[in-house]
Length: 503
Image (cartoon, rainbow, N blue to C red; front, side, top):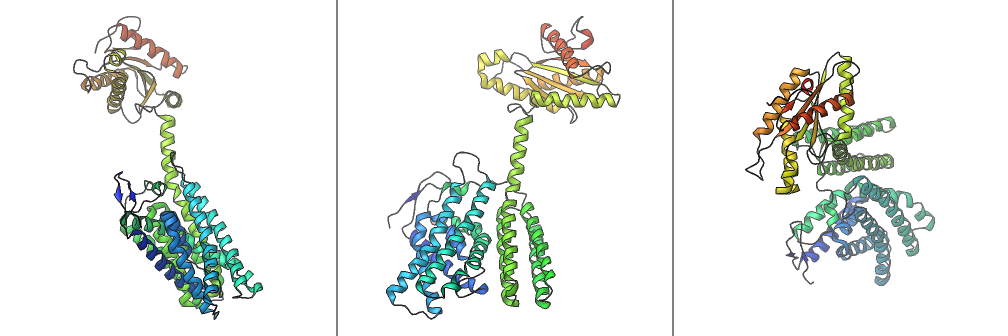
């Protein structure tokens, strides 16, 4: 096979080794055949299983290897169909066995190729991905693919005469449930495994498969994860053991749903990989216990529980991303993008609340109007990027000199405003001096002949009639007195009509 190249995530082209695709075919055939054999643990009839993990192999194979997965999956399905024919005692002529085996293969592969492509297409290329949307496409597409595969598989079975037509159609529902359970239990985890294999073999994979690599995750805590996983699996095993001891006591199945709650705890507190591993282990635990304890009569209920757990878990994986998005949106909504100070709208709202609360506590409130000196000169001589740096640096210096209760906002251009709840006029003047000193102590990285400075105007509440608007107007008037007096100084409210004191 002709060698291809892949750029990987680093952007450097690397040749795909010549034996990569034969290796992929071998891996797909091997894993699919092993999974097909394991599915007999919950065999519902000669043609259906309530647990069919090969669907996960097919989905992940098509998602990662795309067209390169077809040879391996067609061959695996063909071998699986021939094995089923022989196991049921239908010794067809070779050409008929090959024909019906290929029909089985297409009936299985086409639906899962479609759901793999739909899942990939649900991830946009040039905008932020939505995990909730992708999970929805994966879940609904998985159910739809399983239904198509079940109906098509039943039709092929009836056409081949391997079972009575009436009996085969009754297999559609368990066939559907088994496919969905296997897909949800192992599909995303298998996809990550195949993606790692593709990287090892230097096979290019769709860039969309990396869309969620940067999902927010808590710090790794292996010990905590092990305890949570042990509690989840232990609870599930305890529930099934109790049912095995008292099979007529069906309310004991409720204990399994406690394990589901523990599983969701893992999803919301651990990383994506840990969550996918716990889903797969939970499923294996359920299937293994049902098989070993002979709980086949409860298998359908337990698979519904498994499907519910997996679906809730996959949507749960979107929660950290939603939290991060909400934090980012909140930051964009209330903060100035350049300086990190509150934007004008939110600063005014917070200041009005703080002034009302100070009045209710019979406390004063002070306001400082700040104006960066010489911003126009900076922009003219050093460019607007330097002006942005100056604004950012001054805002940082001011934040370092203010307390956590003080509010800093950018009203626009080079004007900032500080509200000081519970601070009287004398304290406000001292804080203003501290701000001036902090700004003077900083240095512009783009200039050695210009030192940072700003002008400050102060106002303080005098009675209950004062509000944000009156404080702002008086502080703004004081600010202009400071600027007319030569900048780099503070103008106190009572000296607006007199003189400005240089600090």
